Length: 386
Image (cartoon, rainbow, N blue to C red; front, side, top):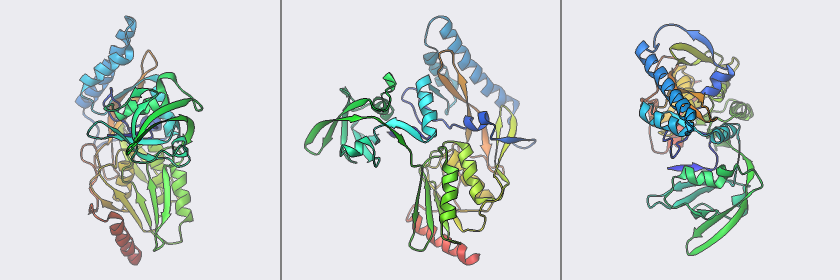
């Protein structure tokens, strides 16, 4: 299990034990338009089951509040019994931080860490320009304590919470003391938290002129960043859209990214409590450049939605391995104490009507070896064909 001191993708909480796609931002903002009839509507039994889950969780929270107990804890118990594998319960603070991170900013020290099999917490990456980087912390260092709290054996989500200072709503400028180890050296380092921004889109040029655009997560502004990268690429050169390890984010941004490569048209359909709706690309995208999308088992949620649209519309050749298969839709429910339960209300489908949830997307060219090299070969063929 791995994590970082920001959450800009579906995440698994130690207590909630559920991943969640913030599809709700699309629905609340009204970015999804249209109402489609017909095929693929959920059955009445499915609607009743999912509505019943929501009612049960809300009722449990309300009953707990009425007798002076924790609505959040009651909701967590109800979610664990509901059978909704993608449901999650957030405290008010956690949900606010989650939304903030999807804005592309967060408060932290710039560490990415994972828990090893022996329970140790290893630093796997340090964000350039962050407090952790300024202190000389580097990948491979072991993190043993945060403000005197031993973290060995703890879920990474708890370690992240300590780094961020969630329990005290610690703002940028507050300090946190880390106990670290590197080889035979053990030391403590006091860092000052800072407001950091995510680099969800990175761009590099290959020797043959093709441009690789890697999207780590669909945070706010990603669609504009991808459009800029495409506009700045050499005329007629191919694009590799790297979605490997992208675990999702804002569907508005996935749709905006689809608009970069499509001239309008359908991106996906989705259902909410039985009513079908649709997401459409904006007209005017670049439909002529050769395009390859790279995917793997870590490509999830909004990233799968984008992949399915590009594949079904014949706009991109998809290369890599089968995607994760997270195609369900969650909506937030505010509980009496301000905490939030996100519960499954439906599923989305690709333009051709394929369901993704539990199935994933099969690449046009399945490979796990030399994926980028394979993509370059495909681009060369697409260029010749054009």
